[in-house]
Image 1 (cartoon, rainbow, N blue to C red):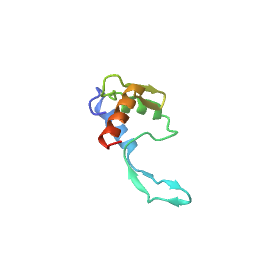
Image 2 (image 1 turned 135 degrees about the vertical axis):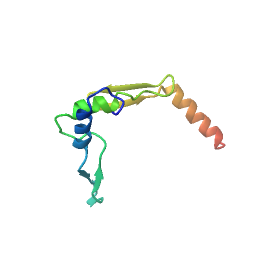
Image 3 (image 1 turned 90 degrees about the horizontal axis):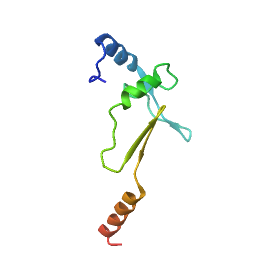
Image 4 (image 1 turned 180 degrees about the vertical axis):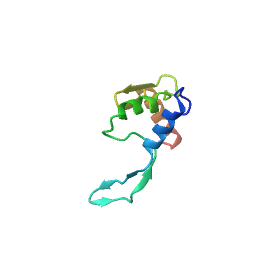
Length: 97
């Protein structure tokens, strides 16, 4: 976000907006400790969709042939099946199967 050409007061407001939030994970009747978080998108917030666009704007697929799909608040990395099969085959050979 620091690389974007936005006024400093907007940047500072966005940073301030992201601070002071706590998170815990609940699963199977257990809860983790509350931890301070300062990254990510606050679900249900009015600026969440715009923050997603900003946060994901510099994401790209690193390997050629892979595709990165971004829509609304979701990002999916598509890896063609041939690459997966080759990777799996090489892993099997490496482990003597």
